[in-house]
Length: 343
Ligand code: GLA
Image 1 (cartoon, rainbow, N blue to C red):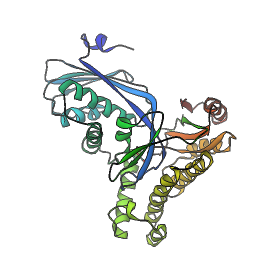
Image 2: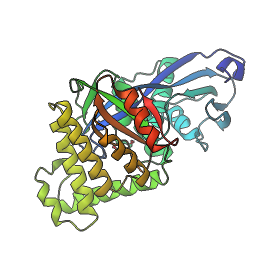
Image 3: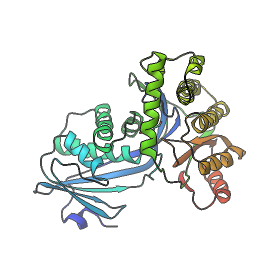
């Protein structure tokens, strides 16, 4: 792999990193004012920046070994919008050399948010931007909405900007209030990549968001966060009923998880998987297979698909000290498509 210096013939003026995240509970709730409970993963994305004295940005991804050239102020294609979105929203008017390298696997672990947060951190340092860590995350969300075309919620960028690997971060996505929550005693996190590519994830995601907005409108509430009696969703037509049932029940699971022991927490994760598979329809048969294998392992408290879904990663809560062995055992049956991400 080349370095910034080899690629651009200069040293970077600034370098910044940001981690991916894995979400334990609270999936597809963050665009309806709900609760989420992610933690950071050790894998990071790193972005180096240097002025190049021209009016063109030169964007290099070391993972893809691909260079894109985009005139200042334009958006570009391929992976460029993630970067040019950050540059344009931050008022950059000169050409930059940008070097990206990432350890965050794509698919459910917020590789996009890690790229945005790392880029915005580097820009904040280079230009002395007056952005706190929450504002920086929200700018990343704006990049997704305006430049990438994904109508995502606020969880991923907030988690990448604010979470650490030692605790879970409870976020109330309506008020943006947050608090660190310890992992259940005697448990640790295992993350596996199912190896199933997330086909149609963007269109499926935006479609789900439209469905729950419609459900909220029909129920006469601002957001599904405001539904406290889950039985009211039964009056909705399908599939809005199922979609709303997922969101409302998922909010309750997050709140229950805050005080739960490992066994109860694991049970909540299993219930989340069933709800994402059956009501929200964002799982995939191969991912379901992997989750079943995990759930059957004696050292696993609970397991589920994580992130937007449609393929991608799974997360399990396992007995402390067993994550590596559980990962290996389960992948021996699941097959070579899968990979251990954490530990
Ligand atoms: C993606 C989005 C998040 C969130 C999750 C699902 O990761 O970027 O905002 O909606 O899906 O929980």
